[in-house]
Length: 110
Image 1 (cartoon, helix red, strand yellow):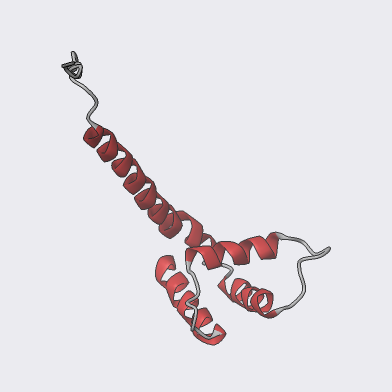
Image 2: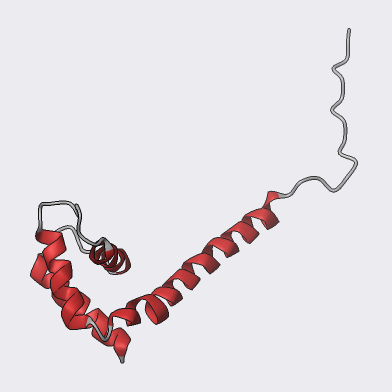
């Protein structure tokens, strides 16, 4: 009878994925925390002095049915950034969202 060939024994230490997974996980957590810090300390405070201008523009952009068209895109970029940094809940009314956004911005501005 023919014997099955034996599998070759590894000669080196081999590949261990645990350290690689830990490094990738640490990098993802670092990026997440850095993004949160940047949003809270740099991005949101930019709008502190323009709060009375930014919020009505955001409300107008959210409720309008027309695309940006020929207008300046800056208002749309600001609105998109604010909606990304402080997302609106699915069942949240526009007034409740704007109030929550105002409170969040005022809290960041202190």
